[in-house]
Image (tube, rainbow, N blue to C red; front, side):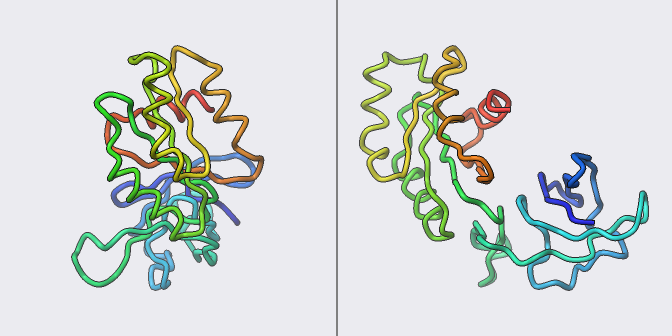
Length: 189
């Protein structure tokens, strides 16, 4: 049965089936194809499942179209996939304190290196004057494919992101803790 990885946790993944079902599968299940080159699965991976219920396992990870990766945490010369089959990498950064231009540039390079578009989404725009938010987005925004200033207080700002997101595109949010990725995800869904 085909499925797509929607979340990765320590020791388990969450998958979405074609029928819209959602469930967790343990990464240490004895039937998993953990000898695959792409192991372990990353968010966005398309996978093949076998078995039913508690016997369900990951039979295979299908070939990745794109792979967003970072150096391995083990400091070996391998990379760790953090997302796969991504079309847009949305760099989420709050307007206060000042957006970290270095972080934005690193994430932009990461997006471009995997063949994805890079968007900058400055969150919490209601905390500064509108012209200040636009100015904060201008410099780093000139180096990405799209730039947005959003606020949970302004639904039209969220709608601008939704309107730019094309049907069938896979969007992944990256950014530091507290940047507003979860609030943005909830607002978009």
